[in-house]
Length: 200
Ligand SMILES: Cc1cc2nc3c(=O)[nH]c(=O)nc-3n(C[C@H](O)[C@H](O)[C@H](O)COP(=O)(O)O)c2cc1C
Image (cartoon, rainbow, N blue to C red; front, side, top):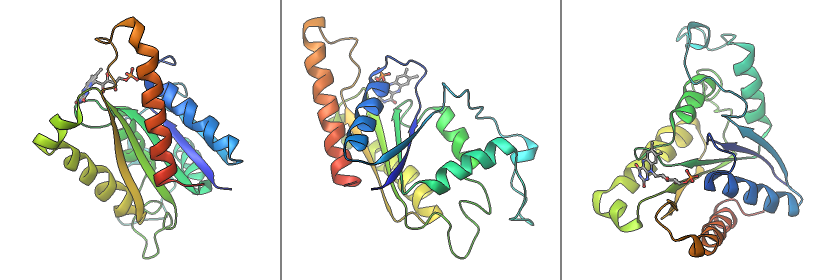
């Protein structure tokens, strides 16, 4: 059974994003998979790049900070990488960008003739407040797909990767009586995306 690194990026543990992550973790564990939950906020991950983690283009064997190497080990151990995040400004939150900047580093995630991350599967699962139709109209869904699938996963040799957006996830305008039904719909859609993209 696959071992999954589940990356969660939300500042509130009661957020819909965190509920989706918890639901998917439970599904994977029920299917006898193992899950390493990387809750970037709860682990106080610092997204800022500092000189110790800056790539040295002349040394792909560079030792980065111990924190970054510990994160690299968690990625290396995973068969599947699942990133669950709220869409902020048509992109993942800054903490995810900083995780990529610091951890998906030269010599580890890219810069080798045989990519070390090749053979893994990856799913970027974003919760978007806005409707599907707005994204299709503007092309922002394709932009996110290009940025994350082509610009990160495939750039690092992860061919089997995709971006899925769950739309209409802003519940503040939804009447209280309808909220739990809406949450169930979002969890169901998240489960379907998992089954389709990271089948057990
Ligand atoms: C700073 C910020 C920026 C946002 N930008 C977008 C956006 O670009 N597109 C969108 O569809 N929703 C946007 N939203 C709405 C969030 O996607 C939505 O609130 C979230 O998915 C709800 O899930 P949560 O309860 O887990 O936060 C934004 C929300 C915040 C707080």
